[in-house]
Image (cartoon, rainbow, N blue to C red; front, side, top):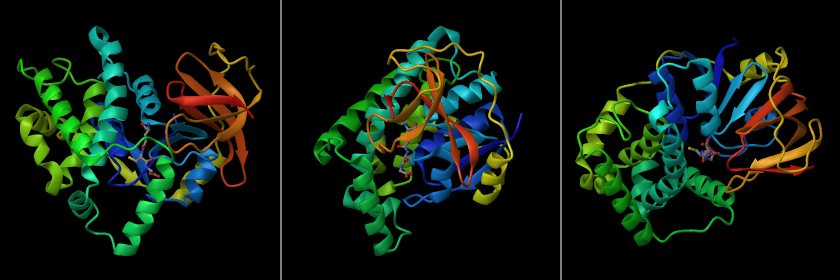
Length: 309
Ligand SMILES: N[C@@H](CCC(=O)N[C@@H](CS)C(=O)NCC(=O)O)C(=O)O
């Protein structure tokens, strides 16, 4: 197998979710640091338009969204599992809630003025302005929550998570960690990085201990790689053969048709190409790029729109 190349930046919560999964599964990886705001020409060369963080690359296969990245890491390194059989459905469903509802509630609470200062304190006023403008465009027309609504809901969510640990089990769904722990963790991790607004966590002392157990997985072994090297690897590789996979069609779109795939909530940048994978849980397009060569860009089915181009 070609090496795992992870495109991310240090203070990205969704990246921390995957870095910790590398630690949990003891998978070695290469780290490519990408910009936190647009433009991201090297990322977009690989993905064809998708700009969200993180992205995982294996040769000429580009995997978007941490839900799919977690599935791919599970296929490559099945033990320890992110989806223990006794709670796999519940784990995925709780993870999806954490990656959407919990995440955006935490973000709204955190990005109040005191939290901005605490989380982005090392940025210049110009950088903060550029960051704000980038994220406003990124969120587009997503409904906004008020601060009191966010703080009140976050406090209640943290209490509910605390309840999940009330019987003394070490992880949210049992004796072993599962994907839900990693999805909840990245919001708690980001909150803890902004001490000025992290006092909400005081309602959840067991959750704070749980966060310590999660943090202990670490990030395992990684080396730095630059974006040019990653692009060269993409250009010199062939995407994995997936012709044996079943083709599942809900859209009336045939294999090989030209399509656009994009997130259905925010960061809605379409990626165009020829539809090459359409399984129960995954979509992918083949596309050719002047910098990256011929690549296959993969997405989870859930949370993404598929349209004829
Ligand atoms: N559902 C996506 C969410 C990814 C996401 O929202 N990432 C944030 C950073 S943690 C992002 O893309 N921010 C804008 C950017 O990095 O350009 C996933 O699981 O990967």
